[in-house]
Length: 212
Image (cartoon, rainbow, N blue to C red; front, side):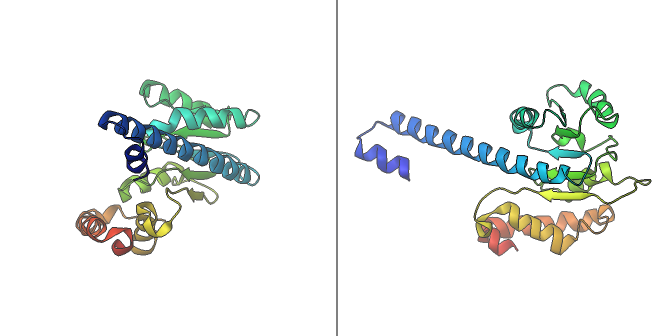
C-alpha cells in the first residue's frame, strides 16, 4: 500500500511501481534476516554458557548467511555449516562436529534424517516445519536411546504480532494439541493427516487466530 500511494503521487509508470515494490520487499527481507541473526547470536551465547554444543536448524535459503554470521561471531567456539548444495559433504561435517571440532552446527532439513547428533546439548529452530514428524525427527537426532542428559530446545518464530503469526498458531497446535515435545507421535500418522487438513482449512478461512 505504501508503494502504491508513493507511486501515485510520483505519477510513476506500472514498471516503476513494480520496481519500487520489489525494492521495499527486499529491504524488509534484509531487515528480517538482520533481526534473526541478532536474536540468534544472543540466544546461542546464553545457551553456550550452560551447554556444550548445539545444532541450529535454519531455512535452506538462509544457511549460508546465518552460518557466515555465526562463524564471525563465534570464532573461538567454532561453527560448522552444512551446505545444502553439497549433500555428499554432510557426513564428514557431522563427524567433525561429533569429534569436537566446533560447538555449533548449522544446517537445514538435510540434517533431519540419518545422522546421530546426540553429542549436542541444545537445539534451535529458526523455522518450524509444517510436518509434526519432521519436528520429531529433528529432536530424534539428539534424543537417542543411549542419551544421557536433557535437551534444551528453543523456537525462534517469525512475525512480531503473535496473533497474526501462522508459526505461533502452529506452535500452539503442536504443544497444546499434539504435545509433540512430551511424547512420540509417529503412531498417530493417520490421525495427524486428517487433523492437519482441518487445521489448514481453518487457518486459511479464519486466519491464525481462528485455527487455534
